[in-house]
Length: 97
Image 1 (spheres, rainbow, N blue to C red):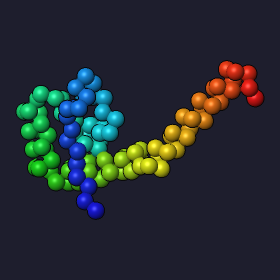
Image 2: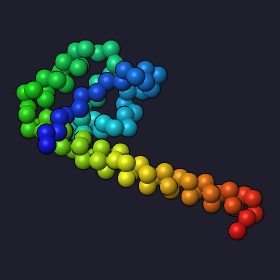
Image 3: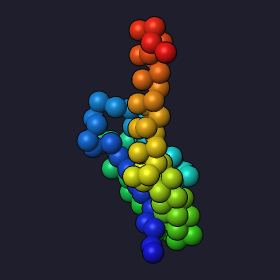
């Protein structure tokens, strides 16, 4: 299966700082570009087009990160821990054992 590199700018969360990407680690799983900087977007695209090995590496690393962090199994496990922690905190605060 082909893994494409991610070149991301924050278009949806315009209020968030562009460096704070949860999905893309700049230079590891993709390339982050600040919004409103088309010249930086063009440069990032050029880097990947000029260096197919970089594109493959970013794409593969990104796929591994998504599969590990954002698969349904991973999300369900983290959700289960959040609920378990919340229940334990409720029991502590209410004096329940």
